[in-house]
Image 1 (cartoon, rainbow, N blue to C red):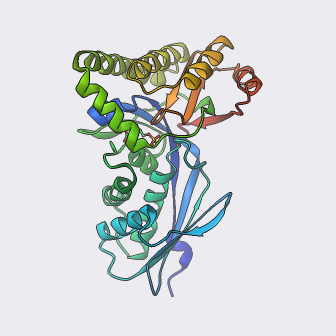
Image 2: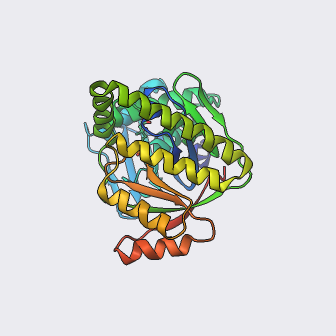
Length: 305
Ligand code: PMV
């Protein structure tokens, strides 16, 4: 009997620090792991099923649901010929733009590959998790899966894949939910429609994001928080022009900056979802300002590996 613990695998959640949406259109973006993960445990069974738990409880993915389809897509890439039961636990807030589904996909791929006796192969696990993500997101850039598989901070673009961005130290950010999360698929489609309808303005927006990402990458490597904050603000301005921000996101960013943050922006798909800000030594002031409006945020450490 194999040791069941051998088939337990984990993968981390993420935030996108700079470059979301532009990365779908071939630009580079920066993503960093957060200290929360998903874990998965695969075993052979009579029939294939996926059971999930998080803080709110435990449930089995309904046959034919997106989750069930994603799990089957992942099993197909891994050439599983016997039914597999997967038990997964998510320690990442879901529907918050924190990469819970990519983390789950990578953890599931690693655990199933181990169960099948496959040699460790990061590229294959990323392929399997990407097949899983496609069921939810249609046309994912691949950044969520790449950072879930690698941890730390990465620069990612579709053509070249991921490379690590060495940081002088993990970053402390403030994070808050700016309302219900819009679906990534619909936000990505809206962003693409904008670029098709406003080609010249779209090119300017992409160029501004490209510059912010380049400046932010250099700032991360030297620990220059002022320059990183400026890159975040420049990126947020471009995302607003792109139509991906909301009045609540704008308000929470303005609150953060007024309270002493160096930079603030939406993270992930936008249209709601999460806001991050960099406010070294001023984190509690930002959280207080958000709380006074009824938004309960928290600090997160990102990029720790
Ligand atoms: O689904 P989220 O919130 O992790 O956002 C994904 C980031 C996008 O750039 C908007 C989409 C993508 O596939 O990169």
